[in-house]
Amino acid sequence: MEKPDLADTELTFCRLRTHQCCFILFNIALFHVLLFGADLVEEYFLRGLSTTYTDMRMLDVRERARKLDMSPLKPNISKAYILSSSDACIHKEVFLLVLTFSHPENASRRNTIRQTWANATDIRGYSAVILFVLGKPSSETTQLEIMKEFQEHRDLIEGSFLDSPKNQTLKTTKAVEWSVTFCPGARFILKTDEEMFVNLANLVDYLLSLRTRLENVYLGRVVHHEVPNRDPQSPNFVPLQIYPEKYYSDYCSPTAFVISQDVARMIYVTSPEVPLSMPPGVFVGTCTKNAGVTPIHSSRFSGKKHIQYNQCCYKFIFTSAVSRDSQLVREWEEVSDGKACTLLETYYGLVSCRVMTYLDGFKHLGVDALQNEALHFAD
Ligand SMILES: *[C@@H]1O[C@H](CO)[C@@H](O)[C@H](O)[C@H]1NC(C)=O
Ligand SMILES: *[C@@H]1O[C@H](CO)[C@@H](O)[C@H](O)[C@H]1NC(C)=O
Ligand SMILES: *[C@@H]1O[C@H](CO)[C@@H](O)[C@H](O)[C@H]1NC(C)=O
Ligand SMILES: *[C@@H]1O[C@H](CO)[C@@H](O)[C@H](O)[C@H]1NC(C)=O
Image 1 (cartoon, rainbow, N blue to C red):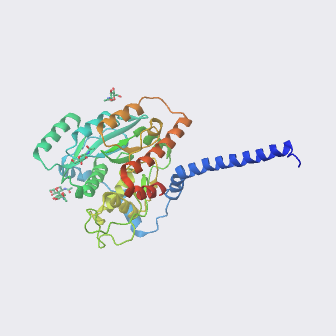
Image 2 (image 1 turned 90 degrees about the vertical axis):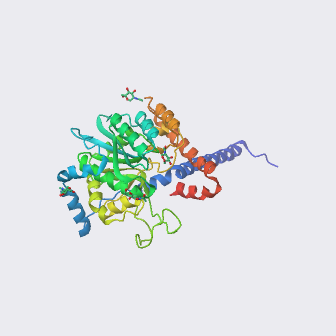
Image 3 (image 1 turned 120 degrees about the horizontal axis):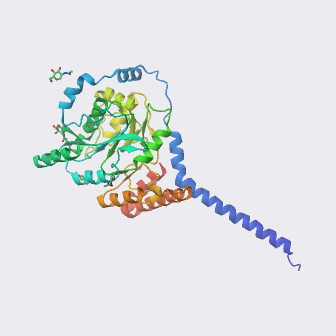
């Protein structure tokens, strides 16, 4: 028998190595596609396309929004709020108005937010005004505490409706009304919740990068093709008479989204035509749809999810849901330490927090939610 000659062996070895290399490369590519592909595809397909406004109703809405003049209504509207902070935007060129929805009872969370991500009036040289939006508390004592808090911080807007889960859409319309009335110069408006960690510097950088696009901005984590809740037992039940269509129009998760001033005006103008019984996010999405504004998706908004903490990841994202005050403080301290992340560190951070957040879903939510998680991951 002939011995296999050396060159042959080497060739086989080489081929094997090539196969192995290919296999490893393929796996790396697959890993990235699985991890980030959905985001890229989403961002591509859900990007706000420029529309031509041929629909007469849309044109009418846009025209009314353009002509909207709230100044004669100011004195009356300010009376309709218990606390109106109506001079918060006066004598300032406001780039970003931040309206943080808060429960009247959660004074301690508001303080934590004031000491962390909201401790800024100037971001990258652009001015920001950061306020909390509340409804009425159910107890008189809490109302007195809120009055005291207002004396100290002067950053509360309190509507004259009861702050209940059912009244959150009403709260949203009040926040929009307040913005177009008392802060008509704000270029962008961020609506967020007290549960959120917000990286304002990242968001401002992003908004600045839009450059020419100062109008028709409705930006957030887009919820695509959501089916309305048709279970009469559920608190979020939406009857067919109120919303007959099979899917909601696309909307941005109400946990955090940005609109430009013109979009706020369009929402204000069309909101009387949309039922207040719709969930807050859907309500806004329906108003913007009536005006021909499509939501722009960014996966840097977390939605309701907590993004597993990783310093470089948090220096990249816009928002993450954080439940405990202590956690918010700790994460903020680390994020604001001034150390910049290199491209590689940011990349590693993103992979890490993506994977950890994904695994976290399995750990906390149990088997039932596993399917939902998988869907969310792939959506
Ligand atoms: C303000 O409210 C008063 C009383 O409710 C009303 O008479 C008046 O017409 C209102 N003014 C405007 C500009 O709407
Ligand atoms: C808030 O910001 C100011 C000025 O940037 C800083 O001096 C202060 O220490 C900050 N407060 C907290 C609680 O971080
Ligand atoms: C919403 O607010 C109004 C005005 O304060 C109040 O009458 C109503 O009961 C509230 N709705 C719910 C469901 O709490
Ligand atoms: C705020 O208050 C509500 C109701 O009182 C409570 O359910 C929620 O957990 C609180 N949120 C925070 C962030 O403290």
